[in-house]
Length: 107
Length: 119
Image 1 (spheres, chains in turn yellow, blue):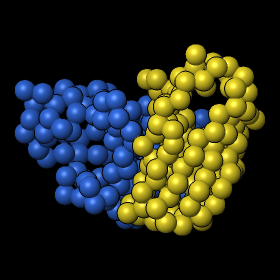
Image 2 (tube, one colour):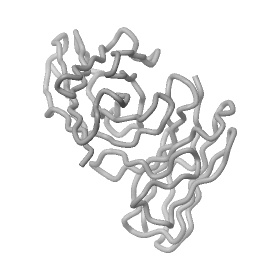
Image 3 (cartoon, each protein chain N blue to C red):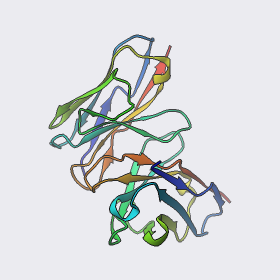
Image 4 (tube, rainbow over the protein chains, first blue to last red):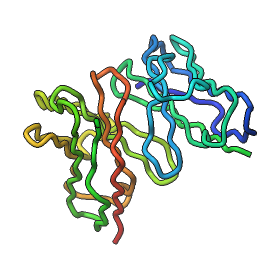
């Protein structure tokens, strides 16, 4: 099973800050890494697929990069509506696995 | 509109059985994988397994193999997750999700079904 390790697990940030969340895989997964946003009391929502492909309707301040074992989700100019938990997910091999999540709090 | 609509919240006692559902609409149901994810209270996401309604090909995570059964009825565009004997530790939110291919991202999520198991 591929283990995904996210960091940080919690971050308190102010609006307009730049945020970087990392996800490290226990073995190479190519670009089969996806990012989700889960706001309180909502279902997760796909933000970025295959490391860097942004989904339509996702604000342009969200971007992803990386390949192999190291991946990054960047949020430029954070907005208050970005308060949420963020999860990475690998689909390279079964079973699918998620990172443990990163909770973003807006100060 | 493409969507997955899940059945409502359930409150059960330990040892009882349960089957929850996930109905797809707005797309060709049999051509997409449907998976299930567990989220225990205050915790992260855990992938349980998935099914391809086109041929009922099913794969489970080792963590959930033998604990649950995933099925689908493509004639009514509905997937199911069932337990034969619930435990208190099954208390969680369960999400169904859609995957275009077995190795793709989860592009559509249901609204979630909260299952509470308590004596």
